Length: 358
Image 1 (tube, rainbow, N blue to C red):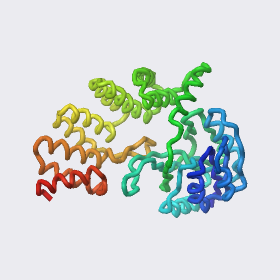
Image 2 (cartoon, rainbow, N blue to C red):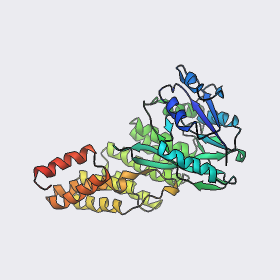
Image 3 (cartoon, helix red, strand yellow):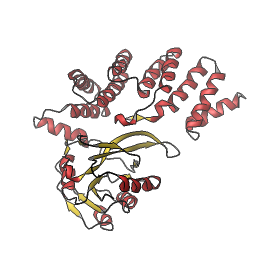
Image 4 (cartoon, one colour):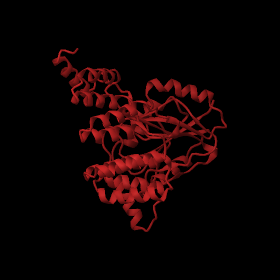
């Protein structure tokens, strides 16, 4: 059976670090905590779980901090987590089974990362991340912000998921501040950094600037497929914010150059037509969304609701506005099956009851 070092970088995480370490303490042989400047009880809580606590001065470089944490590991494999991540109980047994069965020749284990959840704690947004790394492969993080490890060697995809359970928002300006610091120092952003910088501009409602950088990123054609698709979706949102709906549609159709239609893209196209009261066109695209299947092993970013719940909900709306409540009820029931406790589903339930249809 393999042995595992858990490596974490933390700062002011007293609200969540105990929850994280409690969920993983029986799954790993070594816990390494690198504190980058906490001023709360983070270190005090961490000491209940490990003596391996180190300090690393924060230099606006996530990769540097993570690589430092990896340098302290001594076991066969390295598991990395953020303080607001947990391995939920239903996945802990699967994780232990993976430890027993994993071949020592595997370099990288990709595990699902669930980052959004519905009313019943089912994941609604997931993707795979490089999560368990063979220490002797000497893999290194790159990127001051939105850091990543280049996936190479013997890679496998496994089942135990990591769940991101944020309790409080992080500094909303941190990422854009780091990017602008890099630019002020004359750094030329790599394609992946271009994508994430444009996304930060979009989040900060700097739409014109975000559009320009997204366009450059896509035109240069050096981005990873999944970032290209995500860039098209984000670029669409920028255009929508500026009421440039034809540009938004053109951008979404552009995403088909990179892969077959994704449910997320089909739902965005349908939503634009729905907003414009072009219900038949909207119906076509929402139905198309339900026919797609997310290929999780592509390492794409999948909003799982975009393949069933959201299009069902929107199809209910489209048919109701066309005066076809009988068909609308069919799609309401499909949405209800996906998320029975969703607030909108409950409201629609009352609507159909008021019409004596259920």
